Image 1 (cartoon, protein in one colour):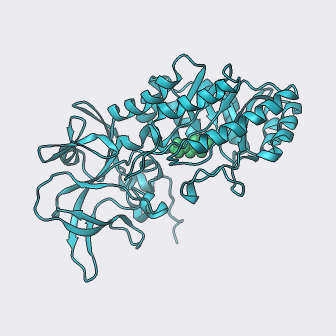
Image 2: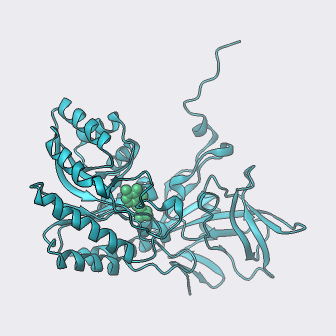
Image 3: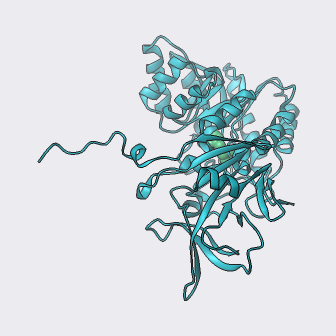
Length: 424
Ligand SMILES: *Cc1c(COP(=O)(O)O)cnc(C)c1O
């Protein structure tokens, strides 16, 4: 029986498996905390998008900030994906994983001049520009280097994605994109600037979106603008509807990617825009349910008001609970270990915000392993070295095979590049 939101995670007997791999065995072999990713889960997630887009001119750009480990990028690159990047560092990672620059879109509200210059040199497919200021700077950089920057303007459609305020990005009053009401003027300006070629329009309304309606609303507003822009003789070859599709952590029931994309295409065709290339920038929905974080139980500490299960993974490994108050399923890697105890699952870090789950019933003893499910997105990619903790190792499984795709960081890795003061 597989577990909710994690179709490739299941008990075989009493042992939790990800595909054919026993998680406690991997934990013993590679140590903990350990991130483990399932190729089958990524394939299932990607397949939904690809089936819906088959036969259409499209570019699926994996939003790599969700999980930017090189092997994960390489896996998507081999299956024809492009990448949505938000920094110069991500550009270098994507290129290192073998990505063709011609399949990269560069998003983000605060691109620096040197990031723009590097991306122009690499030849990225387009810059998703978020302000007039950025447009002017990009034009200057492009002309100075004798290049042309292909540009899509990111419009803020003022649509409520009905998600957590920290991950809602398409409402008036947040820092992202160009206001819908100023977009037409921005396109006019872009079309007149040297070194700029306007090629598209985009939006990205938020993350962990569990409904289809906000996307359809944003799409309508985008297409209204496309029509207004083209009426002025500015040709847009693509429409990019961003990412943001949610996954199941607990009881959420987001639409399947296949269904969402089918609905979008239906509207695009109905409004006579079927000839345009469609871009999508999914992140979480491609990798979120593919990952688990395995951790060893260090202590079980009964308390007066609550019990604590202290594990060796912490907020530096997995920020989502502390940062977004996120609920992530936590299960035992070996079942049938006696009576469960209701406890808060916490890490060793010196912060009260250092928790992974609250009020969870777990039957575990020190030395046992637990797994946090749906930890493939915004998990390892947000890990830090707080408390001088090395970041976790990562393993990818495919059927019965498992590969180490990242070594655990050592104290020497953490001190690299630091300098002691001169002799006193
Ligand atoms: C983060 C981000 C995405 C991906 O969002 P998900 O919720 O992970 O799908 C797509 N586009 C842009 C511009 C982003 O910043």
